Length: 138
Image (cartoon, rainbow, N blue to C red; front, side, top):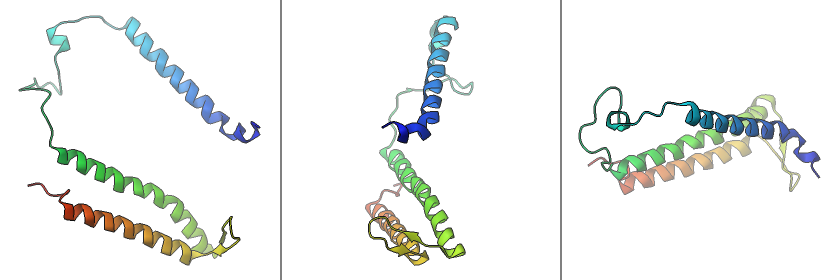
């Protein structure tokens, strides 16, 4: 039952060690660290410049929309890496991949059409956001 999990044991051990070290470091910092309190110590501070005005001011929602759009299109790059590897294998080496369910072998045209559809969906999403005014800074 656990034989299929053996390759992932190292990842689990690393995750437990990292979580344990992070916890120990936070506890030690709390116990050993200085306990000085005061208005100067508790005031917001950034780059040596004193705060002018309210520190809890509101940001325009467009900043968040642009950040989410950036993350959306940036994460799509991650999906391109497996495609690049598979396309290189099929195009440069002439190899084919066999699909599991039907036994159909697919070549470079299958991967090229698949990435074309993927890009088309991204472009449609970008045009939609552009037309909705998500990228306008009035």
